[in-house]
Image 1 (cartoon, rainbow, N blue to C red):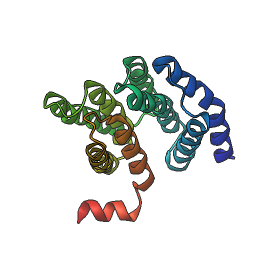
Image 2 (image 1 turned 135 degrees about the vertical axis):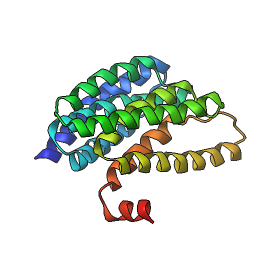
Image 3 (image 1 turned 90 degrees about the vertical axis):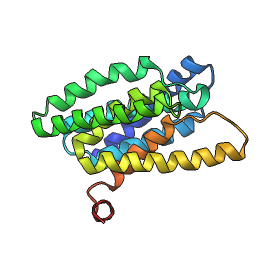
Amino acid sequence: MLFIGAVTAALLTSPGLARCVALATDRHPDPRLVAAVSVASALLIAWRAEGLLYGCALGVVAAVGIPAGWIDVYQRRLPDLLILPAYPLTAALLLASGDADAMLRAAACAAAGMALYGVGCVAGHVGFGDVKLAGLLGLVLGWMSWQSALAAAVAAALIGGVQAVAVLLMRRIDLPFGPAMLLGTAAALAVTNMDIIHLALIS
């Protein structure tokens, strides 16, 4: 029943997410692809979220991350109008759970992510939108565990590296890193708490 509800919610919201991209970019993503990404995200959240409030927090991040990722691909920007309002809503949902230790860990991971990407921004490797997205992703990843935040950072770097090679082969100079960050987050959520991730991090 949980997974059926997740799929239903994703299918109901995906047209609005596609519309959001169209309004921001004047380009229209394939609605079937947006729906597929939305359903995959919803199923991942239903599978991995521990508790209703954490699931809702992940849902907020997915709801802004999906259109933001498309916008980044189209226009190389992550709109503040999407990312910034998600901060207080996500934080409020996490705080409502009453887990002080998890909230402190989430805040620490958000700060560390912003600091790390801030250095990259100063060096010209990523944009300031990536810095703000890193903080938001750090909140929900850190809430789960230190391992999930670290796994997401590693996955994003690997995916970004593959993107960079592809960009060089196509003789282009711009690289949207937001999608790599979002995919890295999804990968970390999928593998965290599995034996493979613990073995990788302690070896």
